[in-house]
Amino acid sequence: MKKTSAIFVTVDAVVFRQGAVATEILLIQRKNEPYKGKWALPGGFVDKDEDLKDAAIRELKEETGLHVTGLYQLGAFGKPHRDPRHHTVSVVYVGFAPENAKTTGADDALEAKWFPVMSLPKLAFDHQDIVDLAIQKAFL
Image 1 (spheres, helix red, strand yellow):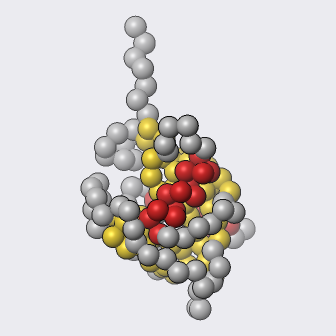
Image 2: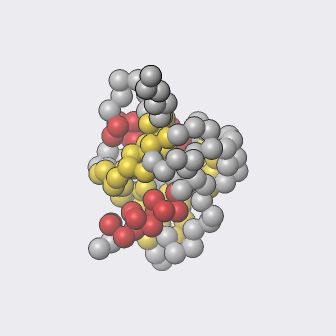
């Protein structure tokens, strides 16, 4: 008998803005395990009957207070074990915020902060791979 797959769908948002000195990317500091206290992209699980882009917009707003609707899909990331809890596939969206965009950590984010793309902290999950691809695609 064929085993039913138990794969969870998540979304992540890579949001850029032009800072005073350099292009910046928005990260959240995780409030919960796994990777509690580490920096990551804003994102989370897709709700039942929720469109993927709507989930990305919702998660971004819930975790950072930032409302960006002009997101476009970068791709899907689904290597097994990318999330230690279970097999997840994340559909990643990219967007741009105004240079004066303010954020605040909320929901399951301790903090939301802009970082220059050239000096990012160590990121949770496979988010560095995602950011690298987003930078490559956004600035080609």
